[in-house]
Length: 432
Ligand code: S3P
Image (cartoon, rainbow, N blue to C red; front, side, top):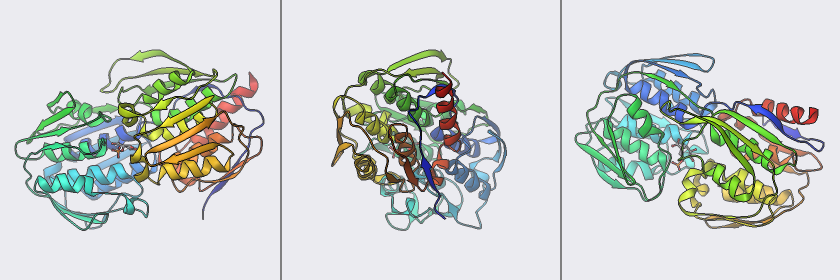
């Protein structure tokens, strides 16, 4: 049964403080590294979302003990060389991060297993990962897409220049390199999120980083450790945009991740004219985090292209909505990667914003949005894509009539309590 929600507000203002759930990328990596390592890892602030739960289930099938108490997770692992061969397939669900990073990890393990995914994931490109892994000697059989069968083997280090800026590809190669013979180097054209590099160090590995090249020496044994996951800035981005667009709004985000490879949204909000204040920046817990306050101010259209794109790739759907409320033209370029996300996000965003009355044109590698436009209620689809679903719900803050969002269950992939937070911020706004 597809869950459809009607979202309607009467001249809303968003106000108050919110602690968004844990970062999805960091939560995946904490389970992965905790399972590769020997011993006990305790994770605090883990994202209890569908994608990360798929990662947990996979490692349980590989013989790793994992226990969850709310957002605390305990991982007890015998280490990657002592995993057991799973008796069932390893199902990655909708999660591209799980699938691609697992390809790298499983390639250098001692087990044989088959990775599968849901309908959307089974159409997403895997060659970007299997090609470099096979050049390290990985044994991966199947075609271009999941399902793929991986027989763990002894790999050799490579020096690889990535054709696309992708943290998933970089991480898969680094994980494979950790168990390989010799040194593995990955060269990036634009810097993508560096959570894997940071967390490898937290688990005791030596990682070299030099001008866009990350290197790891094979044969390092990791030891379990404690990890604290900050709030996901990609989830906060939906309410940051809401606060920026709606007059009288101000929202504070507590303990939100501020890793510079992820904060492109803050730069964009500021450039468009919104008020963004980093109230407090806390010391590193492997990852920088802090308190951020966003408030409304008149917005203007800008160009978003080049090296900033990987730092805000997941935020582009909500940035597109933001651009409909900005004066002038917003041009988003160099974002062709959006075509191969959970859905083709360029096509999906263009189609759904058009239904609301926005002036938006899709290009091969982005969108051109003219604003400001008055948006009207409409029947929108999520395409089973959490970020499109949340964008559609946030759009309802701007429309006169209701916005009906078809298929909202996917929002639980990254933000299970999204609607609770939305209601809370609007109710606070009412009371002001
Ligand atoms: C992710 C990397 C990005 C991002 C995805 C999570 C990660 O994908 O869009 O949501 O955790 O490494 P790409 O590596 O395909 O850019």
